[in-house]
Image 1 (cartoon, one colour):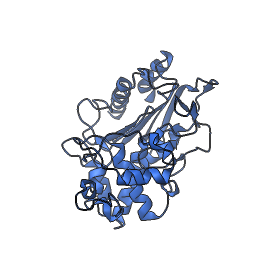
Image 2 (tube, helix red, strand yellow; image 1 turned 180 degrees about the vertical axis):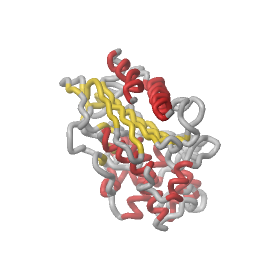
Image 3 (cartoon, helix red, strand yellow; image 1 turned 135 degrees about the vertical axis):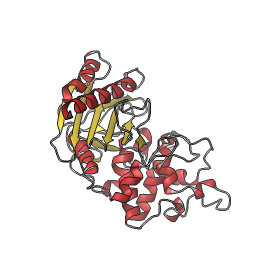
Image 4 (spheres, one colour; image 1 turned 60 degrees about the horizontal axis):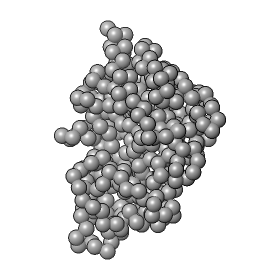
Amino acid sequence: MIDAAFAPVVAAVDAGRIPGAALGLVTADGPSEVRFAGMAALVPEPEPLTREHWFDLASLSKVIATTPMILTLADQGRLDLDRPLTDAIPDLRQYDVANAAERHLTFRDCLMHRTFLPAVEPLYTYGDDPARLRAFVLQREWRHGPPVYSDINFILLGIAIERLTGAPLSAWPLGTGLGFGPPPGPAVATEHCQWRGRVLKGEVHDENAYALGGAPGHAGMFGTIDGVLGFARALLAGELLSPAMLREIRTADERHRTCGWERAFAGWHGGSGCSANTIGHTGFTGTGLWIDFERGLGWTLLTNRVHPTRHFDSGIAALRPAVGEQLVAAWDAQER
């Protein structure tokens, strides 16, 4: 069944649009299916992709690590999603406690990307001392704008988790085949980073995540195809979150945002075949994960589309929905 969905991936690899890719699907109680093709690295040395390779998951870190951590802490009564971040970070904008709008942002605001914070900020250009950069994030008077998908939201959530648990995010158990870098096995290469002056392989691609120590709230995770599928299976089986917290990741606002995730809408990255009860997320390096709760099906497409450079049209925006549509069509045909 997975072969039809993998055909456009193979075509993209053969056309030189992406170096390599792995596609996997899983159900709550069935075996997973995996296909992979292409190269884990093209430069400086060619290296074929295998099932054991670890991908830089980029923003999938938000939904595989940070979101479940926050929701678990909420389930334990250690935070209230609708309370301000200052419950965990009392020193947020501590020099302007009377006027700082940041002090009124809630955990839910950040999870659902409904703050006024910018999408991204080149924090790494201000230095690479993780503690100093965290202080900078907390004390900066951020420019205001309309709600957008924002890495800053999740950097703040990562700091909140560190404060509440007294430990870095990397101390949280994530399951086999998942973790913050460097990974313990062979790694897929990402970009030749102009700032670091080398091809990145086994170190986080995101510059801010690197400068913040490798395990902030918005990026930094690595995973194998089986590690990501294991997470998807646990989510489908109800093993990862309580029923109340599962509702939080499945209930969307008018912008199709849930706590951490996006829910299916016309034209989204998961394809037009997804049920309305599907959530998904993507990562900048070329990763993606989708969970269709109505069908009981999860799938992930992991690529290194930024290797050796992000400044190239890899076609990933069209590839993701094409794969999702083929996979769902094949699944439905099998179920009939």
